[in-house]
Length: 256
Ligand SMILES: NC(=O)c1ccc[n+]([C@@H]2O[C@H](COP(=O)([O-])OP(=O)(O)OC[C@H]3O[C@@H](n4cnc5c(N)ncnc54)[C@H](OP(=O)(O)O)[C@@H]3O)[C@@H](O)[C@H]2O)c1
Image (cartoon, rainbow, N blue to C red):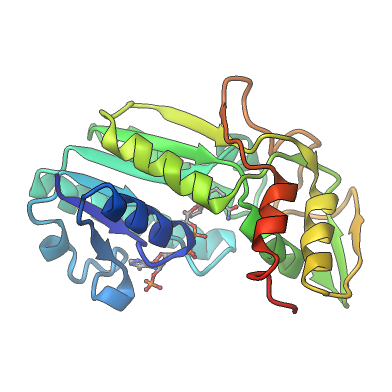
């Protein structure tokens, strides 16, 4: 089966590609750095020729609503259109747990993710949407986006994050199974406070910033209620706990 991984050089994409390689597939890695641009369409027809499955784990470098909307709308329509022309029979996309709830507030990245999902659902193409919670590896990005004058203020919310490796495993399992025609949720094994996860990773990196929970703090442009980032009751939970990941990743977590 020919599989194209769009965003195959990214955090999740590289892990998806190496898992597929280990299983004996030889996926095509599609990213701007390999000459394929899902936004402009450059190289897309060639990359998708003969492909049966497209895995979209690309991301916008813009986290503001307008930049992210433009990227995900244009790229997703290109992937669906070029994919249909190439005979792709499974479009798999990675999105975020709670994207529909989170898309209600203006100015946020999640409107773009919810719109990406709506385009896929309405495309009449065979698809599977994977919803994952935040990655353990993403805590530093959350801290950076929430830093004002050296202080990190994060929303007073709960989250149930998971290892990027487990996200990649979930994406690969989904891609190798028949299209679900719906959304499947994946989450980490245990919930905790956003401030706790972010502060713990900064501490492991010897980053001196203090993290405070602030009811007015936004999360990538969104106001958050306490449980909005949590998965649904039937989500599939991964096994690797945050403390185990932290212990195993200490050498990779470079001091800030
Ligand atoms: N962060 C979280 O906690 C979280 C949670 C759940 C779901 N997600 C979702 O997971 C997905 C992957 O995130 P990630 O952190 O792995 O992303 P990432 O590390 O930023 O990687 C993004 C990938 O997209 C590629 N890309 C960007 N623009 C492109 C374009 N125009 N054409 C083709 N490829 C392009 C990049 O390669 P080039 O730069 O070479 O093009 C790179 O391979 C995202 O859609 C995100 O919404 C994230």
